[in-house]
Image (cartoon, rainbow over all chains, first blue to last red; front, side, top):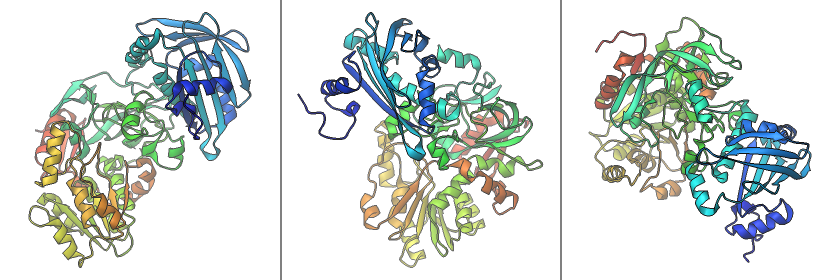
Length: 193
Length: 395
């Protein structure tokens, strides 16, 4: 097995993803898939404010474009409805498996999920630059590799989505709105659909 | 409303399109009173800029009257404003450092993918300049939606003629930043390639910053004449060898600072240009870059290179050896317009900077396609075309 700990680079940049997943699932998050996505963004807002907004899962559809809705079931559990290619949706129940107030949240899908997935989001102080927010996601590509290709065509691939959702989170937190080039409200609604 | 739309190479039309509306809380809608065709619009017109879509509304130099505001806008209806071509949020780390064209949040999240892939990090949004820069509708129209209107637009005092302040939107701050990036010291000789609007404003700015001599380089006699009016010495590259002339005019030293305000469509029959042009037309995609090569070659040892000119992709035969061996410094970038607006508005009102000299043609919005053609075909006579939606057609 390749050694993924020979340098200080994050696991998401590893050229040996399966070994990286082993390390990640050893310490950071539950294992719910064989594809790993990791992405960091620096947000010019205080850590506590970002954590509080994110921890209220009902807020997430505001900037997660593919999430249709999240029903908060109790303090640890929530039900997710997410867009999939070809006008379909996929659903799962998610449970918070570990968290530290203001620092990180780890979650995992419960048995019976349409797509198995787990994730972790970390919030670290970055001095005058604000807060570094790092998301790490593990997931089972829908119907394997072919499904992943199809999802990519429809831009619903988790790697693309995670990157764009983090940018939208940053925009919302820093500017109070999410940038759009739409000219009319009708066009804006169509882009969200 | 009526708007100038892009449909392909050398094909722009005035179409009827939907009026823009307030979408986000910080938006404002501006009724355009004056808008200009920029030299960089010709790069779109010539089809050099990728990610254009048929129907895109062009124009990034514009001003007008505030007619509608979102709940978080700080503008008031009826105010006259000039709008920066860079769309910046004012809240991110880069905006905090006044690096507005590097704003993290100006581009819609999805559009950031293209710029990130091409450049490593996405830049700010731009009005009317392809989908790589956000796909925002431009201001060569009757109305425009302006995002982050509490940060970008500068309010113009009543009673000031549009033509005096319109160029705050792009070319004046761009020319000013070009001179600033040349780190001019008193007594310096500064050479400016390209006497288009940016070059001519760079000439004026360089003198204001203490340059003793400015040498302007172009091949259009009318443009060289304008540079001369501001006190520049001139080199017409069709009549004189630029490197030889510059060296002789500086006692064999070379200019202390050089400014390339030509960019990716440099003219002239030079071998490197021809090769670049062949590659460009066969989609091998290198920029046509004679001006910057020549500038680096002529620049004095330890001198400064400022590059306001627009480049989009890769270059061949960049004189990296000359650049390294002579210990040059290069500064460049899209203009941080918002940073320069208050100071430059004051300079215009105090008549330290002349702006209206540039305007050679005033047309109605309906005549915009002819305006593009004229500007493209006759860069000697046509120095700047200003479009006014309220004006009756004259052509």
